[in-house]
Length: 213
Image (cartoon, rainbow, N blue to C red; front, side, top):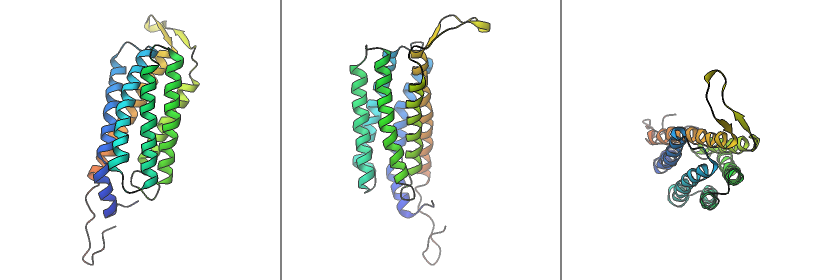
């Protein structure tokens, strides 16, 4: 879809949102990467922190940054509410172990992923942000699938050629998957936000007043 003057105005207003969404995702991804603690309770705390900030950013987007599109605003606000509820649930369920971690993350990923994916599909051809919403929604649903297909009782003793001692269990795998998801979405959000920022210039007009293609 070629950029119109209207598209440029929407991009100029909205581009900080994906950049702001990238910040908590990147911070939590870095913490997970460099932390030796991959317990389910720690994962819940980190997820809760991410979800709290992401929910507030989505709330900002739905109230002040989206264009006058009632459906997109309502979907974004609903996604914000679900994300904030997931943050509260993550903090409240800390200490309940792996089942709580799986339940909270899967519920968040299924609900918000489906909402964002549907929002993007409905906005195709009408919004410059449709591809962003579709991509992030799809990635979030993949997070749910990854959590659901990982056996909760998975446990593997480390060793072999590298002679690493310890046990690789479901908690370590799932917290790592959460970190990978957040890292990927953080990079995507930054690229999307800067792409919209650089695309805010209105198209040059030809002598007869029509914009260049």
